[in-house]
Each structure stands twice: as structure tokens, then as C-alpha cells.
Image (cartoon, rainbow, N blue to C red; front, side, top):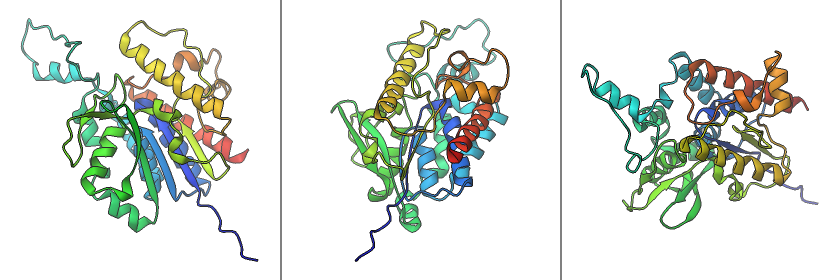
Length: 300
């Protein structure tokens, strides 16, 4: 009798903005327990974590977030902050964002620098590694979500798809086109989690890592800012979709946060960041928290 071929292990990483720091710590810790992945899927800034895992560098995303933390997290600086820096020294000027023209709250210049090491020669690097990675990209004009296989794309399209996938509503604004220079705007984000997880099967051969709480938690300190409410809605959609799937998932939870914080009054709903929040010390703590949750999951 022929022996059944062993399934290749897969990894799905879903996270936006600052919450990708949790995912980076979790994936790096899973790798330290001996996990390796031949197939990865990523949405939001988790797409970068998924790509690095497919390339055999699961600890690199963790190292980059720790560097972000040491530097005060410039990655999550705003377009308004960049404008203020350009106007430094001009007394008497008030800089206000144009709500109807602002593409997103965060500065894409810092994002490009953060992604630069991962956008060169992606298809060839994946082929050499013998792995695959797909990222979720939404065409806003066509109303369609695609999981783009980076290894099957041209080098230019793979780089464009990664740049588009990491952008999320109210964070970094959408980007236009790929190699075909199509005018349609495209972005990604972790709320695309309910679009089939890129074909990931609901089996133990897939690890699912989410940077947002699963199931969603109450956020009693939620503000009324539209930017904040959009990100909260995306978090709720993703967390509810994953919870309903019944999958085993490595994600923030009330119980694990209280255990990790080890202090009175620890409250995940109040203390855990929304994706756009910028705080160096905070993202360093999220990396450590991600390690802790992954360690517990691997030992379960």
C-alpha cells in the first residue's frame, strides 16, 4: 500500500499596524519550538510576517519590531507629523489635515522603508526556499478580494502586492496598480480574514496567528474619532469571523493578557492597542506578549 504523502505545514498571519508586533513575536516563538512552514498566507501587516516565515526568516519580523520599539516606532508616524516636520521653524502656522483628501492617517514613507528589504526578488527567493506565500489584496474599484501568490507573480507585481496588502483602512492609504499600471486603488488589511484565509484548511497542519483579540473584546475606552471607529470595526469583523470558524488560533485573549501582565487591574480591552497607535514601549511589550501566548499554545 502506498504511504500517504504528509501534508506541508501552513501558517496564516492576520494583523494590522501595531498589532503585527504581537504576530511577529508569536510566529518567532512558534519557530523556536521547531515549527517550520512551507505554505503561508498573510493579511494586513501580517503579510510581511508571513512572507518572512516562508523565506525561513521567522525571527526577522520580531527583530524589526524590537528595533521599532527602541526608536519610538517611527513606522506608525502620521502624515500630519511629517508635514509639521517640514514646516519646523515657521512660527504662526497651523497644520490641519484635509479630511476629504487625506488618503490615510499614517505616513507611507516610513512604511516603504520598513518593507524595502522584503520587496526585492520575492518570487525567486520563494522558489529557492521551496515555499509559497499568498497575500490578501482588495481591488476597491472591482469589489474583489484576491489572494496573490507572490511566487507566481513577476518581481514587480509581487513587490506591489506586498505593499498593497499591508495597508489598512484609516492606516496607510491605498496604492494604485501593479505592473499593468491599472488606475484602480488597492489595499489589504486584516478584516479580509473572512475571505477564506487563502484556502487554508481547518486542520492541525495550519497555524493561525491573529494580532487582534479572538473573540473580540469590549473596549470601554473607545473614542468617537472616525479613524478609531473604522479600525475597531475591522478588528471586530476579523475577530468574530475567526472565532466563528472554530479554528485553534494564537491571538490575544482576556485570560492570557491578565496572566502575562501579572498585575492588578490588567484589562485587555483598555490596554491593547488599535492598529494605528504609536508607542515604542508598547510594541516591544506586544512582541513579548506574542511570545508568551505562542509558547502556551505550543505546549498545549
